[in-house]
Length: 166
Image (cartoon, rainbow, N blue to C red; front, side, top):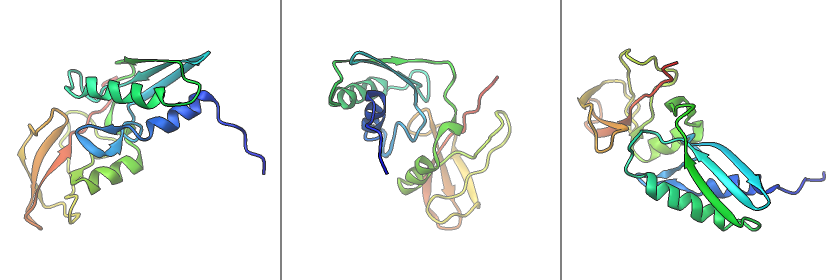
């Protein structure tokens, strides 16, 4: 079986798999669905990234880490990171691997296909119980809430569901 050599765009994408979210270092920005597009021309790379939340204080760190990872790829001469807001990032963009990594980190992943404005239910990332209560909709970051599992008695964070409003 003959394998095709990787093009520069694919090499950059592979390098971005190692860029972790600075607030949840078990999950990559790729698994969070933050990379919208990569454009390459003669060694110059434009990476379009979707912020999970407007005003996220981690964006400068994410931008730095994206530039660092992409710049280390052989053949890359220049890297520009542009945060774009269309399409809007939604929690449906999180990969299955990303959801698994969130749970390993102790953060409950958002429910799939959530309809904005509707109640949402979250299972405990530690024991899987649905017997949980919302302690505070406002967590340590804009994208997370604090919950409490009545089964295993553990407090935990959950990623807030964000759906496309269109």
